[in-house]
Each structure stands twice: as C-alpha cells, then as structure tokens.
Image (tube, chains in turn green, cyan):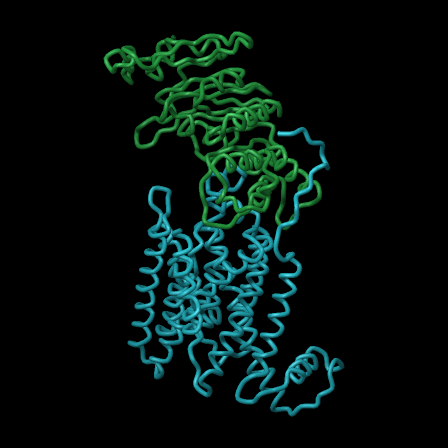
Length: 276
Length: 353
C-alpha cells in the first residue's frame, strides 16, 4: 500500500507540532523517521493511524483519504505499534495479541481456528509464546514491546506504523524486531532514535526537526556530519561500515571538542532549514 | 525468531478452571441461591416443593400439586418476583460495573462509587415527590435514567483533565458526586409530604427489595437482558479499551463515540434498576473482580460470568436481609456495603503495591 501524507499540519494552541509535512512511502518501502525529542515524529505518526485529526492536510492510503473511510477499514490495512501504556487489568499476553483480530471481526463473532492460528503464529514469531498466559502488566519493557509487535502482526496489515519499537529491547531483539518488519515486506514507517539502526534497516530516512521535514533521502545522503550538527547539535563522523557499506554514525565525545563553547549552536527556530 | 510454518504452533491452554466449568459452577450456584431464597422465610418450604410449584406453573403436567393454595401464593406472588428482581438487579449492577471499569479504564469504577446510582435516585425521587408523569408508567425509570446519565457524564468530565484521568481524581469526583446527589435525594424525600418519609429515604439511599411485585420486575428485566446482549456484542471493543485509548483507536475503535453510546446504555440499565431497588452499592465493584480472577479480563467470557455471579450474590444478600432479624428487614445495601467496603480497601492496597 502506498502511504501519502499531503501537507499535514497539527497545531495545538497556536504551536505547530507538525508543520506542513508531505511525504510518500512506496509499497513495501521502509521509511525511518528520526529527529530530536519534540520534533513531531509521534504526532505525525498519530495522524497516520487516526488517533489525531490533522489541523490541515490529508493522509491517503492507496489513494483513499483515511479519515473518510470507516474506522475498521484502516485497522484492517494499517497496524500501529505504540509505546505501551500500563493498565490495571489482568490482561494476559494472549488477550493483548488477540485484540489484533478485532478489526476483522463483527459483533458476536468468536475466534475461529484461523484466528487462533494467526494469534499463535504471531506469538511464536516474536518469541513470546511461552508468556501467552502471563499477565501483560508484569512483563519487562522489552517483552511488552514484543507482545505489541505480535499484536500488530495478528492484525495482518499491509502497512505498519511503529513508534520507537526498539525502545527497551536488547540488541538481539532490536535486530530481530527490525528484521521482522523488513521481512514482512509491508509498507512501514518507523520512528527510531538509533540512527545506526535506521541506516541499517530503512530504505529512506526522514529527518524531522521543529515539526518540519529537514531532510528525506537514502541513509547515505541524509546522515552527514553537517546535518547531525544542525539537527542534533552533536559533533559526529559518518563512515560506511567496512564490509556492508551501511553508513555508521560515530559520536565525537570527550576532549576539547565537547566543551559547550565548541558545540555547534542550534539554528533559530524562524530560519528556514538549510540543506546539509 | 524462528521460521515457523502455519499450523505448527499451539498455545498451551490457559491455566486454571476451564471456562465451561466456571459457567457450570455459577449456574449451579444460581439455582441453589434461587431455591434457598424461595424456600426460606416466615414459612419455610422444602426445596422439592419449591421446584414442584415452579414446574407446575411453567406447565401443569410437569408436577402434581401436593401443596396448599396459600403456599403456591407465597411462592408465585411474593417470593418469586422478589428473587427474580434480586437476580435482575444483581446481574445488572455487576455487568454495568464491569462495563464502567472498561469505559473509564479503572478497576475501581462502580455505579454507586461513581455517583451514577445516586443520580438515578435523584431522578426517581423527583418524579415521586413532585408527582411528575410525563411518560406515564415509564416516568420513574426514565427520570432515573436521565439522572444517572447526567451524573455519569459530570463525573467523567470532572475526573478527566488534559485527556488523562487518574484513579484519585476519578474516585474523588465520583464519591463527591455521590454524596451531593444522595443529599439532594434525601432532602427531597424528608421535605416531602410522604407519610413514611424516613423509611423511603433509607430505601433510596441503601437499597431494598421489600414489597416487590411482578409489575416492578419487567422493565428492569428487559433493560438488563437487552443491555447485557448489547454489551456482549461490543465485548471486543471493551477489550480494546483496556489496552488504552490510543491503541483502541489504532485498532479501529471510534473511542469517543463508543464511550458516549455506552454511557447512555449503562445509565439506562442503572436507571431502571435504581428506580425499583434504590441505590445498592459495591455489587458492581466486587463481582467483576472475582470473575476476572477466575477467568481473566476478556469481556466475551467475563460478562456472562459476572452477570451470573451478580445475580446469585444479590439473591443471597437479599435472603440474609430479610431473614437475619426477621420479621424486621435490613436494607440490602447495608449488607453489600459490609462486604464491599473492606473489599474496596483491599483492592486499593493491592493496586498500590
């Protein structure tokens, strides 16, 4: 499914959290969404899975305006993996993953053999089937994250939106989760903090800052020392990995370079984003 | 993450009693509670005779009458309607409690604790005191429904601030609302020209099923059954709410519209219940918790079980209310509060760990 964001802005109390963002994600493409805290990544994602209405602009999935379609229509096509929010109810892991079947069901429909198989497969693919009847609330952060990805799988989407899915995950599970999403060959938008993970797993990277898109291209073109200095205010080198050629960000820390006076200053918010 | 072919994976069965067994046990409990409550009273009847009379009235061929006409009257016109109403009220309160807990995503929600029952009391008392009759025979339940809905909406918006609702705010807003509305209802009753005003006030505030007639059973029974069926139909959506609003929206639920519609449904059920029984507390708090401990939080399974348990619980509570100090009656709400108060405190302590 092609995901198109057309001039989307989200304003709250006069402040633009997302400011006139347009982008297109091709069928099967993985787009990484990076940027400093408060850049508007999560807010932009929320407009994609319909949790927030854009103040202006529209979001299209395969040419259909997602806000004009019935709410179940989108949920059968697009799954969101969000930061988990704790609850006070004794939901089991199985219950949480089974929620992913809801968009495919009508009132009074039970879970048939196919649903149960889909749920069981999703649990197994995320390596959490041994936790099926454990209370979701008592899992570790990483286990919860994997369960939420399993729920998205049970939704059988063609498009996935993931908001920092590798948070709380150890290295092995970070790689597993991102490889899994890539191997699903779904259209994916992934907000990530780890630029090296983004470089390794995303076809293109979109850098956001102050609600606007600062740069949008392949990892090698986007990740440059100039952009990292400008957007993240860090001093870093970018070198291709000797074997894989994947761009790798190396921070220059310690020594004289890291004194506040030597730190590149952040551009004023009013100035137009300069290309790195 | 291993490569797995479809069909290769089996998830182990949930530990604990199978669902069918739990439902079977709850049905047995309900049958026992009904039998005991019809058998016991100023005239004690053997259980066999209770079922003989019931079966004979379902179809005369099912049982030969070996009892006096007086006993049949006691069973059919006095005890049976009261037991049925207790079952309807108990089931309705329990189901509404479970729905409210999902809707506000807080396990401490209960129709009484959120002020919904008191709102319904104010509505019902207003009709009686001011002699309103806009809707004929339905004036009382409709006024109670409107009172319940107003209280529920008010508490929801008082407790919600900036899109978030903490337990503390919800409980405080609910308790404050319940107190104010109880006071309003009591004030209306004691300043009215009702000759038994103190008794009426006690009945509205603490609940009671004394003097139940068949005419009182139908409206809450229909509302409870219809409401429970609707809730079963949306039980998947209730499950989604337990996972959080944002996730529910991403799974295709129009959260605001859904919540508004279910507030109306719950207010309707509570309104018709309170209009006949007064405000009985804690049933809607305790039953859902016991059921979730037994079979988990999935509403598709938990809603029928909580209805059965609530029905049995209130039948037995009402049985105690009218037999403990016979011939006097204790308002049944006193008994449910005696059980429910400590339970509530235990829940709060358990949750704060």
